[in-house]
Length: 294
Image (cartoon, rainbow, N blue to C red; front, top):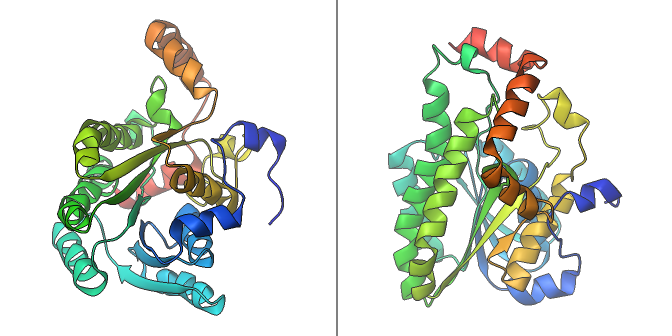
């Protein structure tokens, strides 16, 4: 694994790069990771398994989950797969039941599954399904899963829930990201709202406001390919930092002043986004999928 660029490191939250510290935090523990078939979820699963955790892998695509589990097993780790579509309530209910019956309450839950859509309003006027899909995967499914797991975690003495959010929910919302940001913001608001109640149950929480990760999810947007960011393996070290240090919030240093400025100068951001929108376009992928799936 090569070192990330300086710009990539500065644009992202702090990482934990000491494998001994991670092993002390997760060895012998059960870690449930959603969205574990690709990108950050897969990289986090492999990192935590190498540190001695038993990882429970959740994603929609069974064969891709098997590939991740096979790599983990090949490196001497322990992984179990649970192919599940988080947008299906019955499937989420079955997932929670299977996890509790087969492995007991997880010690750590990493809520990583996400669906990203960057598409202009013009292309969404006949696509309400864009909003249904993002809200199901990014908000309703994860909430339903946690509602089933929280009592079991409480009875087992507590644990930790790590939410992989996006720095976008801390900023003034930009055009074309409405469906994605609304769904991620919904879960972020719910999670922060129940945090005091979770702490009363001895369940610690961490919210990670990720900056750009170069994955297949961000690849269709040309501008993102030119921005500084991390690859999934380095981003997984940010998840490790949340577990090792127990921080409630991890975010890029620049998000704090930007958050304040966004709240105080919303009109300025709105005007800038309006102007920028006129000189940008939907990606070829967004236009093509609109034509095929509408």
